[in-house]
Length: 328
Image (tube, rainbow, N blue to C red; front, top):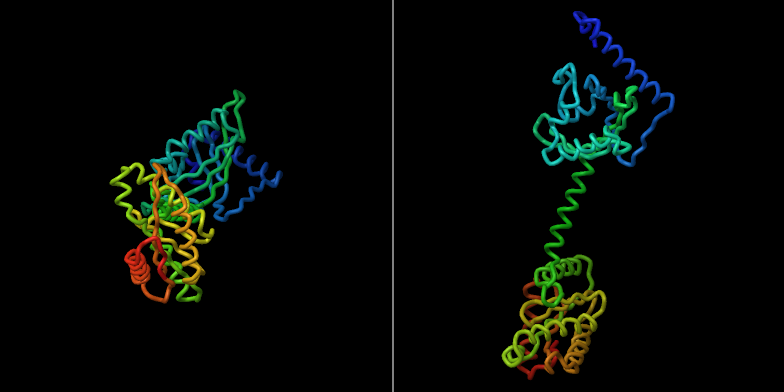
């Protein structure tokens, strides 16, 4: 404050100002003597803040207000606690107030919270705030708090972006609810990724397109419940047979697509034969016996649609050749 700011003040007002300055100076001396340091792993330290609870005056490093877009002349002369709390994000306000009251009432050793606060341009910035009571009255009531504040907007934005990306990924990598296998959407995206890698870096990739023979007859003769159980057990069999690096998915209905990264067509053919033998040797729920046919295709640089279509053509050829066979 300037000298002119003291003119016209009553004796009682001047005494309050002196008491406040004494508390602030005492706090600063304490911190200096104790060489108080708060070392955090992230950057963005905006400095210390001090709150005189009795006068409701807040003293702080101007960096926080500058970060929010406020110039010194934009700030009121008597800057109170409400200047910032009134700008809290509606979703954060109650939590921040609760954290502060818990500390003021002695229910928590420190005041510590993260919150969003509205900048002058209407956007919100994230802050990490930590403080504690440093002066009590003779009656044990809090008189003075000191704390430190950090701008964590960049870190929070990264966390939010990562969370959104993970959520999108989870939506894409949904499994088929009946079989527990990957769904068609994931199969296509995984295949696109592997095909792109094969085009740019080289390497082989093959697919095995399989279909249970005469599956409609299973549903017609044994019912859809048994049909679903057959699909579930057949799915487990396929997963047991393939390599850990292979991806098994339900393409639709009783059709399955198996992606074999790093495998040639003969490797895929041998995998298909192991699956075919395992299927025809198993007795499924309800005493059902089934067979399966498959078409193999090794990637030749074509589009994904053409890649799958070629495997499907080989599957149709296997069906026309008597079923229960794998066609390269």
